[in-house]
Amino acid sequence: MRPATSKHHDGMLPSAPISGTGSQADQEAHYRFLHSMLMEKKLHLLFKIYERLRRFVKRGPVPVQEHATSLASHLFKDLIQHEWREEVKELFALFSKPHFKSLLHVHDAVAQRDYEPTLPPIPDSITDDEDDSVKIVSLVKTKEPLGATIKRDESTGAIVVARVMRGGAADKSGLIHEGDELKEVNGVSLERRKPKEVLPLLARSRGDVTFTIVPASSKQDVSSNKKLFVRALFDYNPREDPAVPCKDAAIAFKRGDVLQIVTMEDDAWWQACLVTNNNNSRAGLIPSQQLHERRVALQRPKAMFQPQQVKPAVFPVEEDVDYGAITGIHIAGLRKSFRLGKKSNWVKEAARSRRWSSGVHDSICPPTYVEVIPYHKDPKDRHRLVVLVGPSGVGVNELKRRLLISDPDVYGVTVPYTTRDRRSQETEGMDYHFVSVLKFEEDILNHRFIDYGRYRGHYYGTSLDSVYRVMAEGKVCLLDVHPSKLKRVYTFEFKPYVVFVTPPGIEELRLTRRRVKFICEKEDANQARMFSEEDFEDMIHLAETMEAQHGYMFDKVIVNGDIATAFRELKADLQRTEEAEVRWIPAEWLRFSPAMARRSCGLLAGWI
Image (tube, rainbow, N blue to C red):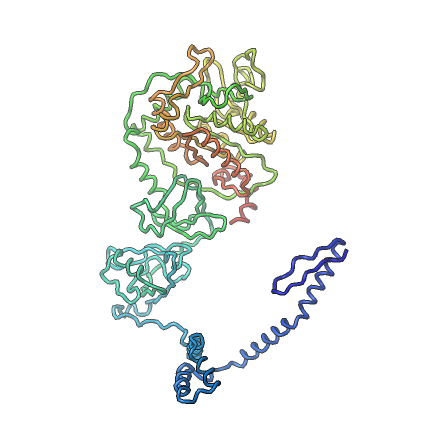
């Protein structure tokens, strides 16, 4: 088969030749195409024009006339006095066209070198000492902010540059720095003016904005070769922040967004860039860690600082919540964990939450930012461990069960260990791993358990071995533990993705949970118990305590108001996380694992 070619007449490159005989036919077609292109007359004419232009530039031409506009004006007047022959009419019409007049104007500007900017004179207010260092900076104003904030120097009363946003127009110019004193804006003196009076001057400016500046006597070099990345653990909208120095200079972000910290020199306001796919975001102001911690401390509800009476012991729970949506289905491994079965566990947690006023809250830092580093997924890597955490009754177990049923080939759960006797309807390795007390206690001493405890005289626990079994099957292991036990698996080896399930507001809790029942132990007299008002209050208090104490480890926060909506959000988020080629992992994982740090150095070098 001969290669098929296509003719073209619009200057577009033709599509690739179609060949059925292999690479030799392709090469022949490409050769023919290249030969036809080189033989084109238009291409040879372009080469000739290029060569003549090069020779013309080498001669260093000078303009014959520097005032072509005035010459054309005189000629235009002379033409009016002549009789109107066809040639005169044509020339007269040519001189009358606005495009021709613009061409003559540009010609004169180039001939007179009038395109070079002229600097305004130095203002009289500049002293002799400042004369040698004064700068006049002209910036082109666009829709984007100029990228600098100003303030008034308390000692001198002068208007100075407070900060320069990285990536903004001021920063790109390299001519404006922090601490520079502004003397004039577009010729208007700033002496004895307040910062709020300067902003309207900039707003009214059109085109270029000209600053008369006295440079700072000393400038700190804030550049650094090290890049610092953090993951935000809270939402921030500068439009709703009355304390931000400049709303246009700040950037908004959501919890989970990755930020590159540019400078931390200001104790209250850092500069950072949002890390996006195109990496072209400009730097902006964000609240510093210290500022946000102070804000959260001031905004904590008063009820959290007032000791309250703890209610009597609540009922034991085998599973979180039975929503009635999935019933009659037995899933291996979905059994009672110690955290859900311990009779007074919920009460003790609630009591600790309500005793913050005794001084415990002083040592708890609210989640702000956590340092992260990029990790490129290795094809040989196992699936990440997915850990679901949340207060009792919030629906963690139900979400885990729905994930298992939705895709049992992808998700798997650990089978708990226990020292109690196996019952007739139970199967070893499916309902529990039944071991002796001696074996269980040996594993405790060898730190083989992620979480364990005693219930009705028997040990229950989640072993690391059961996690390894699920991961060895090539599945995503779903783990449900108390956040205080996360440290055992919060390592580079497991790379856990931690999802915090939190309850909605009290009103929505009353609406969605009023008819929901707890499923209790079979030997209990009462098979199920309804949620009470105190249960709702305890659930919210526990969620607030968990987030304050362990929020820095949470990758995703899901509000479980409607179980179906929460499940769809959770599953979609897990799929995006699993498919992502670059994962942002806590920097502490590599600090505490030198071997893993050496392994990741090559991966990180390509990013940084």
